[in-house]
Image (cartoon, rainbow, N blue to C red; front, top):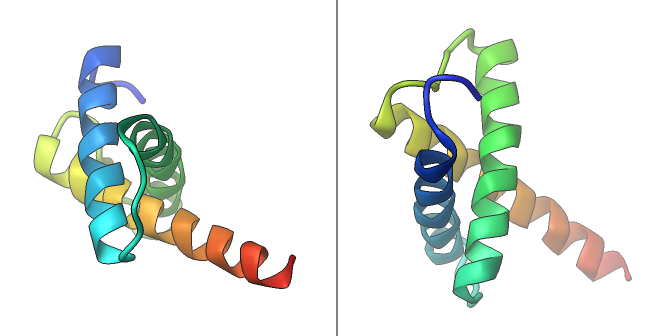
Length: 85
């Protein structure tokens, strides 16, 4: 997660979590959006770096897109687990 400071990752996390919430038609609070967005950034960054060889650190737009994709993947997987339970 180099390239951005902690504050930047929190802002990206909130934006990505909010965007993923809207894309997946869910309704969460600010704290949940932050957690989903930051976890999404980790998932999206891992996928982008290992599958596409794209480094999202240092570029706000790419960082938000990658974090949002990761957050959507996270919400999708959580939805699958929730349906099974």
